[in-house]
Image (cartoon, rainbow, N blue to C red; front, side, top):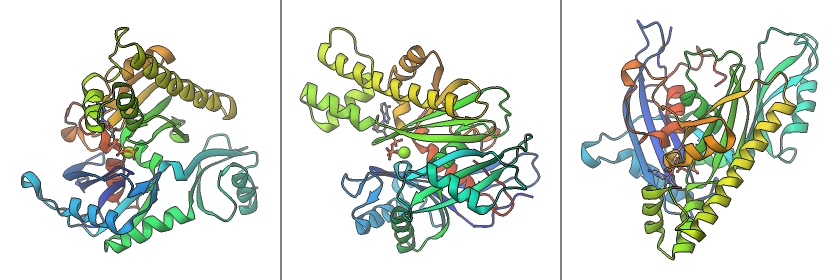
Length: 365
Ligand SMILES: Nc1ncnc2c1ncn2[C@@H]1O[C@H](COP(=O)(O)OP(=O)(O)OP(=O)(O)O)[C@@H](O)[C@H]1O
Ligand SMILES: [Mg+2]
């Protein structure tokens, strides 16, 4: 039976330039499927320099910003008073990958797992925490595991920060897991097709490949909302705020009249498409039994950049569209908000985990 064992727990997404919180109530009892109600959503812009590339540079200021967000009562909002939190570690400082080991689950030892994962994890030995989960498969000649790793210093920083806010930490998720939890339809079985999720944030983007009911791997991509702002600022000689407004107004909707800016935006998007293609090729050539990627679901505030989904669809010949962040809550909560909440994809995925009973849920996403 589903029930919420951490009362008023919430999901907290801490990014370089923003913090966001989502609180859900688990109302699954008496329903066939898990159901959740939205209790609260909040976000706050962070000044630049407090967190840089996922590293907390000014912990005291970050703490104060999070406190302000949680207690804010703007426009009649209710503060978030929960004392349990599920947070995410920054995408660029974590590693997540599905690995197949050519031994049966009966033959495999802990040492086999350590030896194999060591070869894949891109951090210095001894500098990371790692965990793995056995993935049950029909073909048991191989052992399938999902491996996650985070840099120790980053994980410790986030732990200290949350403890300094007097919050009990339910868990620190790898961001890709949180995103997939909100963006992949939980009630659907994907047969013979793989999916990709493209999260476009303020300072980084990431691509998550999902196939055979699990995340296969995730990859950071050098594309972001700030990158587009810099192009606008430098070519049009405008302020950061004007660039932000221009980006929201026109996005990639430029034509030949705007020579230089069009050229720079085209290069940026070609670069993004090249990186996505490389990641897809990597999946198709290095993983066991890969299905074709039939759809790319976008999330993050950058999913709203005008013309971007259409351009990616055309260049990759894979349909790419902004996703629906509320779809795994319940039919009643599937509101059409025009994409306004796409930037909450990570926080919603965290909130879904916070509102579950982690001891009753076997959650690989
Ligand atoms: N309507 C819009 N059109 C274009 N860009 C938008 C729009 N709305 C938001 N953005 C951009 O989305 C970005 C913010 O997205 P999001 O909140 O997902 O990022 P973040 O989670 O703070 O960043 P990161 O994940 O990199 O830490 C900003 O660059 C913002 O300008
Ligand atoms: Mg983000």
